[in-house]
Image (cartoon, rainbow, N blue to C red; front, side):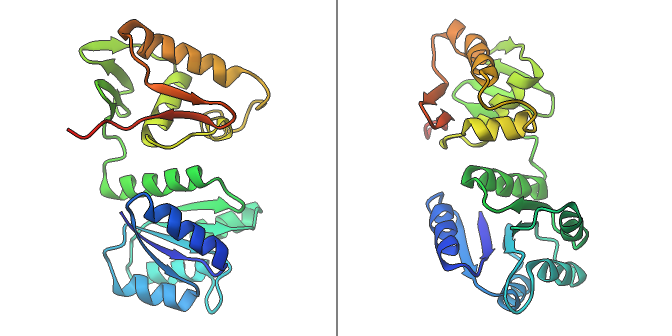
Length: 227
């Protein structure tokens, strides 16, 4: 995936460049709005644009608006410290596809970038796999090999989240935020209960272990090994 990062804070820009590059993404970094506009306008091969709102020279939201006016339809995610609803509305009305408030969780940022890319490529509902375990988001079905597995809505969403981020640790906070929309207490054991139930359905009957628990960090599903 090819990403343009427009961020004027050097430490954050370096962190984003390093983290995304380590995932084998092609990353270009600029530090001001006018450069972001010129680069994005001149190169249609970017899969996603990551724009900070408060860029010098031209704000990220203005960059987004002008790109849309110029016919550029590359997905845009805006980073900002602004938390007000009017600001979010302003960003979305400027043509942004998503909006993430600083400080943010890197796992969540990566997931949102991937989701934007899938959506633009038209494959956001493609089956997700881990070995012979297959999750079909479009049909809301799960199977291991030829065996259908019935999952609750929460179990399905947890597994989808883990499979979408295969190879990366997904924190309890991220699961709470994306599956429950933050509508429960992180101190409760509701996530542990659902993960245990999920394991009892997708792993235990088949003598396998798909979900790894990392104490104090979260959960991880390893990606399929190369053929």
